[in-house]
Length: 227
Image (cartoon, rainbow, N blue to C red; front, side, top):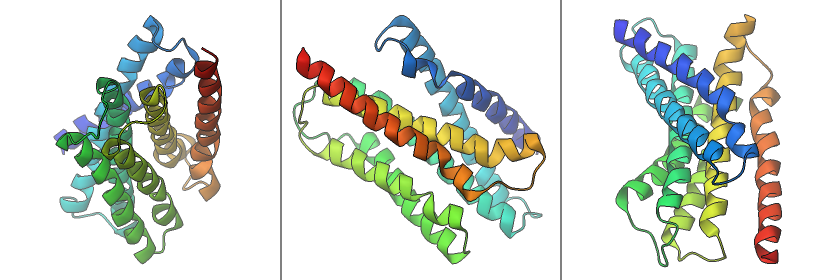
């Protein structure tokens, strides 16, 4: 239990760090010092969030004898959020690492992470359907979509100028969706001392950030075309 409390403390600290910093790389100069330094702090914070969330979720499911169905179901959802945040951050960094590739990308760790996101989205969604939980049924569709997009990008020859740039910010904004969603689902109800929040609130980060991704894509495609 002491180890669980340690991971929970790491999770809370890293989670609030990511929540405070995620917007800075979005609004600062791309490739600049602030963007890079704050971006790496955010990535490391999300790495801790992902690992600690996975551990806490697994502990509640397999080792907590007092866990009821509600706690177990949210633990599975916590594990999915851990995979979503970790996989999108990993993808956002790895596309930069291989931005000069000219053919299909078949590096096993990258394909595994994207495949894990896709598979976990399907599995957790089916689990949510069996327990009749709208949140756990429909939210993992984000993972199914993002995992499919990532695998498609890795397994195909790159097309379009600056392809890695667009994949980078879409991956990192996907990570931001996981960051804010986790706070709304797990953090906000505890801080406000309420039992639950409306389902629409849980999907609000996705509703907000998807147009941001589209807007960034349109803006930078026009910018690169003009150059």
